[in-house]
Amino acid sequence: MWYGEYQHTLDDKDRFILPAKFRDKIKDVKRQKFYITRGLDGCLFFFASGVWQTLEEKLKANSFAKQQSRSFNRLYFSGAQEVELDSQGRVAIPSYLKEFAQIKKEIVIIGVADRIEIWDKQRWSGFYQENKTKFEAAAENLFE
Image (tube, rainbow, N blue to C red; front, side, top):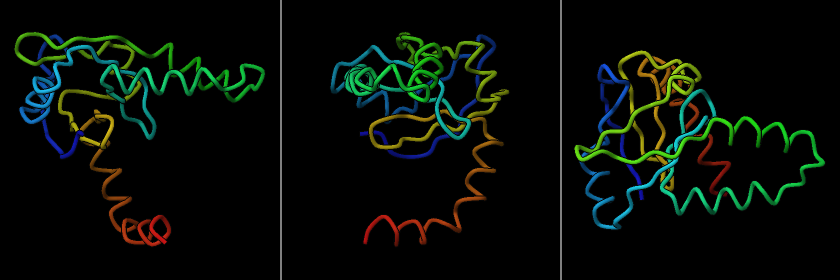
């Protein structure tokens, strides 16, 4: 559902504008509620409410008796914030999530099928440079 790479800048209130292509999809499916939380590899995850609820059910099904499950769920859900787009398609990033992802001013917003990821521009560049040469090798292992 979400695809592409877009560069944006946070405004003075730590808001970013969702890319126009994403806003168009939101209008089509009439979704306004989203969830933003700590992601993996140093980014933030941004989910539409339906995907969030499905993921939440999967994570809640994990045994709370397992330490790894408890730790992950604590960090993941405590970092979550329900957000809505304003009339201009802007979303505010809470300060604790901005700090987690080391976001300064410039960000990269990428669509990763069922989620949107928000990266600090320099951090994304580093991730991309480190992983672009591994892309074909990963494809061989994933698509056997």
